[in-house]
Length: 282
Ligand code: PAF
Image (cartoon, rainbow, N blue to C red):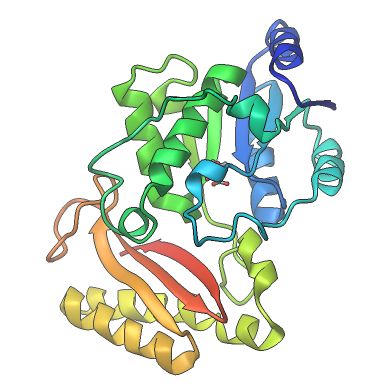
């Protein structure tokens, strides 16, 4: 596996891989876990070669967020990727991605509104900007993202469609189902911050979501089901709930009642200072 940290060698490495087949990209911020490796395996099934980017993108962190303490473990990440048969690890430093006079931002309205877009102002501009750059840098035939960050995936697809991106085409931006621990908690690099007690209590998140979805399917109004979910999370030890909402799965617009269009339950809640997010189909 080639590990590349500057743009010029990246271009040569990408050219060499693309000369002998298709290329799939898995964008990550490192601190790889089984969820990322599942994306890598899906990428291997989608293309001849796999590239993984590892970049903790400062533009998607707010001033009071965990950029400084976000886990960084490049050496271990590269060992994991090598074992999965990845051909290229693209691990630029911040100045390779954003030179001193960097001035451009990609902003996707609509799908970025609400949920994490409201709770983390500027977050999706940072995500869309870096993913647009990663697409242009790596020119992948396909790109794979985890469905745990469902709103992020919707933002990236809309960006690719609106900007007529060629590589990857919008249809080749693939979502991979969330990987969960045996008790149902979605895998996340941030789970590493949880104390043993908080980790145990965190199972209330997927459990509460499943119960809320069962209640909605049995006829409970959305507002009542999400209000109960919030109360249950606080009772289980969560310190706050940023949101618990049912929204349209594609436009991410709020829905007042279930209709024909696919809808999902989205939740972000904090436990012991750690913010966990999850989403499930309703
Ligand atoms: O989901 C992530 O890890 C990041 O938001 C991404 C897509 C790699 C962009 O920095």
